[in-house]
Picture 1: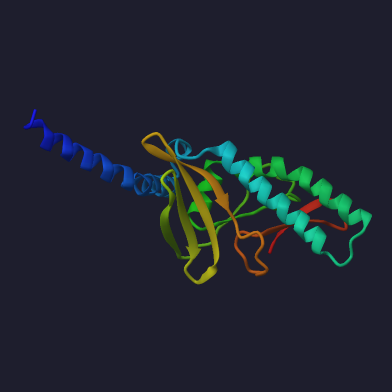
Picture 2 (picture 1 turned 60 degrees about the vertical axis):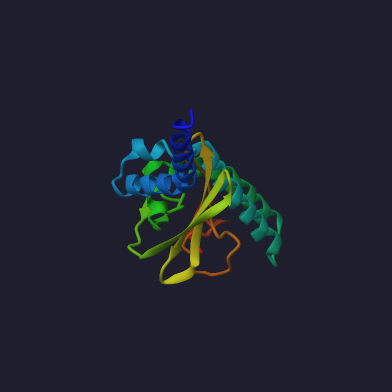
Length: 202
C-alpha cells in the first residue's frame, strides 16, 4: 500500500494540473478549429442556445438604452424600436453559426445588415492583429478577452463554463455600451426612413 501512495499522489498532481490547464487547452482547440474552419469540432465547444441568447439580450438592451437616451422620442421611434427588436432573434439565429463564431474568435466583424435581401450570412472581414488575454473568473468560469492590437478599446469577452472535464463557450459579450463610433462589435439597430429595419456599425 505504501508503494502505491507515491503513484496516487503523482496521479492527483497530474489531474490537478490538467484541471487547471483544461480551459487553456479547450480554447487552444477552439481557436484551431476556428482557423481551420472545422465546424463540427468547433460546435462541440459552443453552447449555441446560450451564446445566441446572450447576444440577443445585449443587443435589445442597447436598443432600449439608445431609445431612452434619444432627445427626440416619439411614438414612431418607439414603434420602430419595438419592430427592430422583433427582428433581432431571427437575425442573431442566422448569424451565430459555427462560421459566424469562428469569425468572431478571429477578431473579425459580423455584418448585422438585415436590409440585405440575400438570405446568406454576410461577414465583414478584417485582417487586424488581435491579442488574447485569458484568466479564471472562478473555478467553473473562464474568460478570454479578444482585443484589437491596434485599438485596445475594441474587444469582446468570451465566457467559458466547465463542462465535465472540458469547457464550453456560453457567452460572448460585446462592448455594447461603448460610445466609440469605430467600435468593431457595437451594432445600432435603427428604423430607417424607408420603413425597414437596418443595422449600421457604430
